[in-house]
Each structure stands twice: as structure tokens, then as C-alpha cells.
Length: 470
Image (cartoon, rainbow, N blue to C red):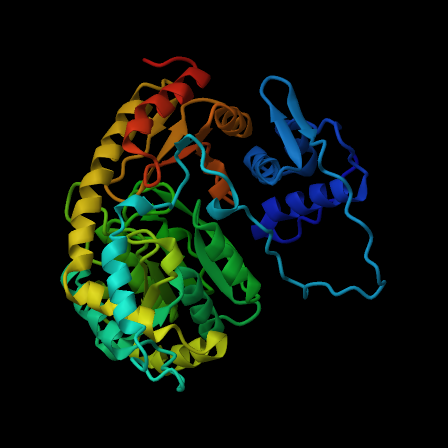
């Protein structure tokens, strides 16, 4: 297969291969039914890691452009017809450096019978009746002076409630003025990038890590450099010396799971202070911890105002609420509030006050206690189910709504994920979260999986991988 791939951008090789294959399909150079070369063969021809090619294939399979057939190969799907040519020769195109590739999200697909997708909470646990009453009370006529613009930083009541909640639950000492309410982690990170990142700045991210963080930072012109993680979390010694910003998930490394050790936390803070580096601490799901008490946050250990702390309610409550926040160092407060105003003005005051009451009245704490019990049961079932799969080895972790497991030997991840989905079992390939690290395995979420479906779903997966027991 004649494939032209621009691999000059070191941190986006998956995207480059994905775009080259997609262009070949859309132009008709690759037609329906054409067989693609094995991932190992194409990786050798391009001089990249096999996982890089496999991840690009997986994206195209997930989007319907390719069909992965276990034992047979990967083929261009019948429905992958070339796109029509632009009507006008002067069609608009993204600016140079814009590398975002559309990805499928959970709301765009049907719910599989055995739903082990990552990052989805159980909506059935959410107290909708309580939330409906709170929102209705704030929607009464004139409750929030709807003829005026609200503060871009968020309603004062919610900022105060969040500051108290974080101090009690995570040891994050913050004044209400330090809190900026956002539409989830995505907007919080986008605001940080607007304020701190200039084109060409070196930004370090964990590898494997959170794909949308890479995309957001790259969209602002950053040179995103993947940094490996191990059993102690981010390898601080591997950080480039000219780093401007570090994005990390120290409480529950995404997606592998281990926390950043105390020694590494101290080393990272020392690095940040010595090199004048900003740290973005994404504490995305630490509410769900099932064993030991969590380590102190980087924010709590920070003595030099280097850490921007991010949080979200997408995992603890619902993604549909689009509720998140950041805790800003005093030196960045005004700039981040200004960026929030430029981004979309302000959020919905009635929803923010309803959330403030939900937090302040103890409803959030009650919900978390109930949800933690349900998720703990599912987690134990997942661990037991994976233990019966000889090909998989669990990566130890103590928090969150997913478990990562690595393959003990060479396995075609794309084929496994596709075959599992054909059996109604939705799992995710671990390598799809990596850029350069050679890591293969599966990520198994249990937030959305009904408790009764966990064991039978993993039994199906076990049969695909060589048997239900060791």
C-alpha cells in the first residue's frame, strides 16, 4: 500500500497515520473491501512502534471506516465511501498546527449489553428528584435577575461551597476567590492553556495519558512531549528541561491507575520551582477511593504557587451537568477569570446555585457514600473477573471507576476489542491512550456497568482470550 505519512510531529504520530489512512479512504485510493497491511508490517515500513499503527487502526474501526476481522485482518468498510469534493476551490481549512481528530464519545453510540467503557458514571445513582427540586426553586421568576450578566468566575455561593468542600475532602486550602467555575475539566484546561501556553512552548503530559489533554494543549500551539509513567506515577527525571507546563493525574494516574508517590510529588514540585514551571493537577475521580487514604494533593504540598488544581463533577455526579472548577494560584486568578469571560461569558446562575445548595446541604456527601459502596462492589467483581483471564495482569490501583490490565504476551488489541464488541462487551485498548510508550492491554470501566452484568460480561471476554480460568 502506497501511503504518504508526515511523521515530523513527534508527539502526534497516531494522528498522522490516522489522517493519512482516512484521506486514502475518502479519496477512493483505498476502496471498500481492500485489505490493510498488518499493523506490524506497516509499523516497520513507517519506522514507528506497532502500537502507534494499531491505535490509528482502532480509531478508524471505531468510526466505521475499517472492519477488524479476528484471524483474517483489517479491511476498508463497505460504507466508507469517498467524500464529495469541495464545491468551491477556496474551501476553508484549519490553521497550521491544528491536529484534533474527531473521536467517538459515549453519547453518540448505543449502550452495549456489557458496558465497560471508561469514564461513565451510573446515572441511576444520581438523586434526580432532589436535583429537580433544587433547580426548580432557583428557576422561579426573578430569582437571579435574569436581565443582568453574571460573574464569569461563577456564582459566589458555589465558589464558597466548593472551597469548603475541597478543604474538607481533599485538604485543598483555597479562598472562594481562588475558585473558578467551569464547564468541566475540558474548559478548565483550555483556560489554563489560554493564559499560560504560547505557540512552541514545551508541555509535558503523561504517556499513556488523557487524550483530550493532549488535544487541548496542542490546539494552542504547544509542543506536547509525552513523558513515561511507572508504578510510582510520572517519571519526573524524564521531564524536558525547557518544560513550560506539566499536566498530571497524581491521585489516580489516567489510565493506568497508580498514584504519584510522595517522593515523586516532592521531586515534581522542586522541578517546577527550579525551572519556573506550571503544574496542572487533574484530580478527576479521587472521590472514589477504596483502600488507603489518598496522598496529599500537589496543591496542598505546593509552597510556591505553581499548581493549578482541576476538578469535575462529571464522574461524581453526571457528565450532562457540565460542572467543573479550577483552583488558581493568586498570581493567575485575574487572568483565568478574564479567559473564562472571553470563552463563553458565564455559566447558568440557577444551576450553579442549585449545585451550591446540593454541596452545602450535604447531598453531595450522601450521594458519594452511596455511589462509593455500589462502585466498590463492581470493582471487586471486575478484579475477580480479570483474575480468571490468563492473558491479563491487573495494574494495581485503589481509586476511580476503571481498572487497567496489561497483556502478558503479544496480543492484537484491535482484534480483541472488535471481537469483544461483537459479543456485546465494550472495553477499551490501553494502547489507545499512549503516544510513544509500548503498552498493550485493556481498560475496563465499571461506572456504567450494571452490577449483575459484570461477571457474565467478563466471562465472555475471558473466553475470547483463551479460557475462563487459570
